[in-house]
Length: 117
Ligand code: AMP
Ligand code: ZN
Image 1 (tube, rainbow, N blue to C red):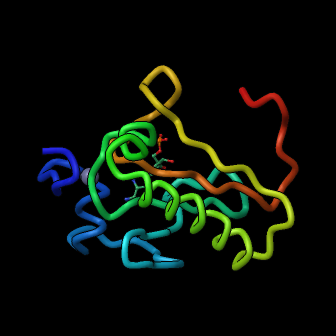
Image 2 (image 1 turned 90 degrees about the horizontal axis):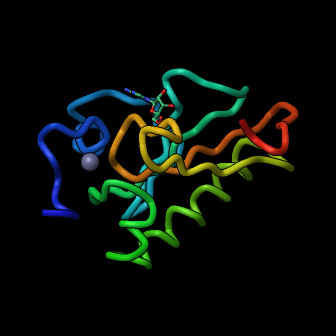
């Protein structure tokens, strides 16, 4: 059931501490940790502790937790000393989504192209 931990989900395993991660922030509802394959000097993932497959599903089911993810993304940027940063939600494999547990990428510390690729 959506919202419940999924046995085959990497990010649920990180929430459960069954897989290690470099955690930079934690709240009651969210976890923020460094991306294992960083695309910028700062590349942190902010995830809800509950399982939803993508950001829109999270927002539809648990809007307060979606707001927590956005707020925590901003707090990560403050903590990392970023004046400018980009928050990305890839949705669907065609957009590069590889982990189907909602997550925000927080990217910064270098110039970021617009429009993105
Ligand atoms: P996405 O491609 O948008 O689904 O983002 C998934 C992200 O998770 C990618 O940027 C991966 O580099 C990252 N990732 C995969 N495995 C791990 C891990 N064990 N710890 C931290 N980040 C990971
Ligand atoms: Zn999950």
